Image (cartoon, rainbow, N blue to C red; front, top):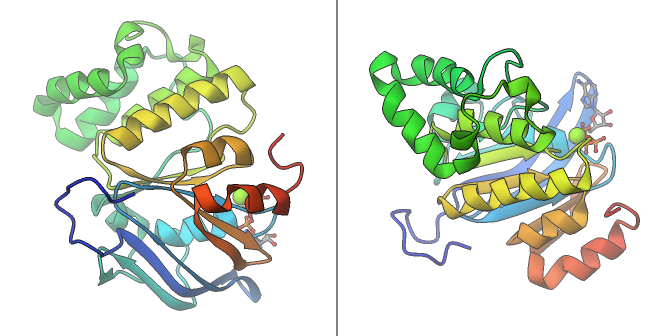
Length: 247
Ligand SMILES: Nc1ncnc2c1ncn2[C@@H]1O[C@H](COP(=O)(O)OP(=O)(O)OP(=O)(O)O)[C@@H](O)[C@H]1O
Ligand SMILES: [Mg+2]
């Protein structure tokens, strides 16, 4: 948690929500939500169905504008900044589900994205980088994406976003619908991403798994933060608060 030497300003969180309120039309989903994500750290955002987790991550990535409160990126007020701008600034929302082209190979999927991001001349270097971060994708580069395992497909979609070198990757129920063995694979990928220096904000139904990776934990209930702190200290409390959610 922000302990490694880094170029970030010491003490300034990577991303901070301050007293954020947000909703949908007249419906208020979030009430005074405040928490901070430290550079290179992993924050698990937990809570039961409808607690407001997805709304929080939509605010964090600029997909939903708060109706009150602030969003700060490295100490700079970016409230109201739109998702495409925040993505350029390093806050990236991982695509949900299997957002890959099934009938294209792994490499063709990557090339499509990399051409858009870097232009043709940048594709080769980007591929090398992606295969260094995700060696499995290198091994399977000629395989059709549709024939990859569910975990490998998630890995491929993460490889497509990681090339932008985000400072913060946000995932919302990345392991939804995956078999346990494949969830383990997805978590190995998240560890790789964390080790590359990217902070993570993870929304996850699998509380146990999320806590195994998290430095910090934030628990929401009915749109409010009810527990937050270091995962090591709060793991037990969190699991007791959310019985059954770690199945
Ligand atoms: N587009 C929307 N329009 C109206 N209400 C919405 C919309 N999206 C979410 N809500 C409401 O906002 C509240 C918070 O929803 P949110 O999706 O943030 O919860 P969540 O914690 O992600 O739940 P889940 O675990 O089921 O994904 C819920 O009561 C939900 O019904
Ligand atoms: Mg949700």
